Length: 174
Image 1: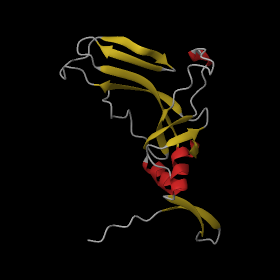
Image 2 (image 1 turned 45 degrees about the horizontal axis):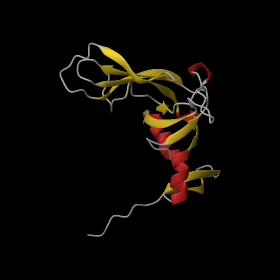
Image 3 (image 1 turned 180 degrees about the vertical axis):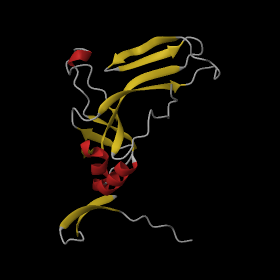
Image 4 (image 1 turned 90 degrees about the vertical axis):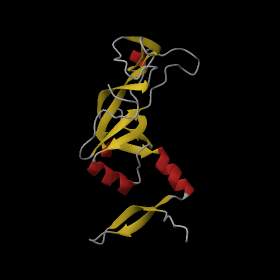
């Protein structure tokens, strides 16, 4: 079992880890949507990336922590089992857990240690290729603020190539 800030694995190559956003559990009219009818998540937070993926992310303006869109069937779903809140006794072995609310929201389960009160979460995490990123909400916001912009350049073969240009950060003169 992992601590709150620990991730289950380090992706390699051009792979990324994404925490999917949970789908709607209630309709606009207030009707509960059963888990079997909920749609697979298509949005999530970019958590970790392999070395080749980091290079591609930099070239395309993506950053860890960004809210991204991805294809409905992109990636492999794994389970992220972690302690999200430490209990009263840091030496507790966490031998007995009880289910805590909210119950199983789209493959997410919460538990509480009966001995120390620690909170545990089992939730889905996706491993996918960096190419599976369809769109990036935070990149668009950075573009609107002027922190990054798309410029047209020419590659070594004389072909047009668009690249992300980051705003230069000037250091204060001492």
